[in-house]
Amino acid sequence: MDKQLVPNVSVDSVVFGFDSINLNVLLIGRSIVLKGTQYHDWKFPGDLIRKDEDLDTASKRILKELTGLHNIYMKQLKAFGALDRLTRRPQDMVWLKAIDHPEERVITIPYYSLINLSENSNAGLMLNANARWFPVKELKHLQIAFDHKEILQFALETLRNELRTKPLAFELLPTKFSLSQLQKIYEVIFEKKLDKRNFRKKIANLSYIVPLNEHETAVSHRPAKLYMFSRDIYQKLKKENFDFTI
Amino acid sequence: MDKQLVPNVSVDSVVFGFDSINLNVLLIGRSIVLKGTQYHDWKFPGDLIRKDEDLDTASKRILKELTGLHNIYMKQLKAFGALDRLTRRPQDMVWLKAIDHPEERVITIPYYSLINLSENSNAGLMLNANARWFPVKELKHLQIAFDHKEILQFALETLRNELRTKPLAFELLPTKFSLSQLQKIYEVIFEKKLDKRNFRKKIANLSYIVPLNEHETAVSHRPAKLYMFSRDIYQKLKKENFDFTI
DNA sequence: CCAAAAGTGTTAGGAGTACACCCATGA
DNA sequence: TCATGGGTGTACTCCTAACACTTTTGG
Image: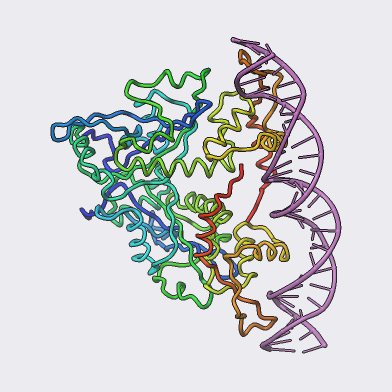
């Protein structure tokens, strides 16, 4: 094994991408031959960290190496370190042996990332060959490696929680977006329909969601007004209020 | 070094205790001789994990060994793994050498715990000799080891966030408590005075805070009615609503 | 002119906030 | 009888939730 790696600590990336319709997650395909049969399954991009890099750096490096993605929103989740997390599934043990993984305890530190996948973004095009986007709601029956299904569940819960109180939706949208696109994000992630008029009333009160003098083009219906998120205004307001509820 | 330990992964415990007046945190005293001068500083209870235990188990074991505390609320924070986290302060390097700590990268996984320190609890009495409670608001000028001040800050923010939406206050209170005690917790942790009448109105709407037919005794003022938290009712309600706000 | 999504106001109920005095007990 | 904290109600404002039709564009 590479002497530069910390043998007991890995990072994994749960990358969420929104394409105007679905919340998707990025997985890497893996082929394993077990008892003469070929299996295919999926895992998050991840690997052991190096001795000379901190956790955030490792996460960025590995995501870039394995998917081509870089410079996107990224936040640490919590460590997963169950004793049997790498050995629960026979396929996983075969694979670990094949890639010459040390037979060590590995605690993994997952991150989640957010990215905009609409047409005018090129994140989808830059992916490495064995990486693929899956709609989150289609993952139930997918074969997923190690404890990565559990990690995905935790990442989803964290995303929902943070989306309630933080301006994360804008990480999933293009710079200029319509209110329908914004509303759709909340509807998809919380799996709940929202009232259009009430939603817009609420947004109208948020000074950091700024209307532009621009509209959608080339749509076969009334073109929507475009808005942008002003991080400056948001930060300024956040400093002023320390909004508190029991 | 003990072969049974994972050399790169430790756990630390940020234990918060509420004594009806202050939010306190538990620290362990440490003496170091550096260039002929004796220094004293403080750290969280923590140590490397064993190869045969998972993270939660390690955290419980180490807290018990170092403080005598056990069977208390405990929740993982996030991993801290800066390259220089153990070597920023010269005192820390002396100490690590003295206890024969391997010269390895150590990523620590901190937990936070909650405990009730009022008179009728005995958590305070069971402490090991070099462990001590400090009011959180008196920690600004205390010498604190490694990156533990940063971890404390993160633990406090997490506690505040979770206290907004989860029934954590009851972990800091005796089984039977008065509404003033409950209110005091929110006031101390959020550093904000609350209106007594409005607070009580809100509590009266929460079916899981159950009034008892009992009052305080031996107080030199009108004795307060006692209440308890019903985890059963709380869980039942939580299942029914999936309360959602943008 | 049709299909598709954009855009728009009102009302009723509930929650939050501000605010001041009397009560029960032990010393 | 005094000191100490316990206990209580009202009025106002603001936020939420429910609800249906017209407008603009491309095809």
